[in-house]
Image (tube, rainbow, N blue to C red; front, side, top):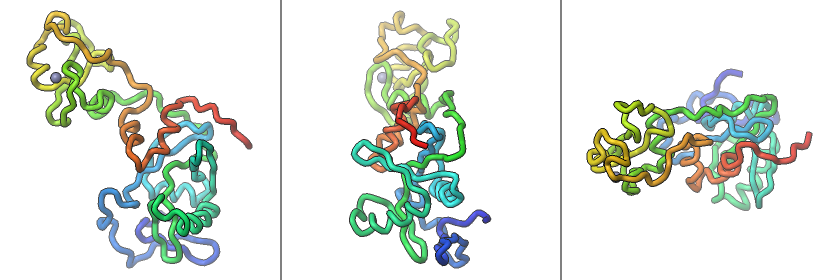
Length: 238
Ligand SMILES: [Zn+2]
């Protein structure tokens, strides 16, 4: 099977083969918040978050039986293969339509999964959180680490707590967000010399901070279960 365009997916016959619909509307009609833009959290077999994929890739994995949908209801987990998820979707469409986003195929509607579980994949999560501007802002919650106030990313700069001129490294525990005012006030000095204090000591985050931000939105709240527990001790039943 090739790579079908999601907007053109269509259920065909009892085998539910997904084929490209040449006259399907363009994916560009998808707006922010559209189901087609949804992100799906991918877990390995140990229920550890390993990556985030787009909805099209998630459905490919499900359809190829490389993954199953994971749901969290009342604190317990359930998994569904593509067929049972499609069937369950018909039930959900009737009884809880507002609780899901929907992908429309020609014959039916399928609820957008938030989390999927890889069946034959033991890759461990990357425990190396990328050190970059975006993740630093996310770690610090866009707050200046000197005055504690929140700013737009465009109004924040990155500050070396121990200045580079004093041997300060460009690392998670020496770089923080600072507003322009605090940054200028501190100048090329240490916090002690400048008479300023950090809101909290900077550390390397345990989980990807941008993932955490994602998980804090209502749309992706089920992700929280898997990000808070890097080593999830759920009982695995074969
Ligand atoms: Zn500040």
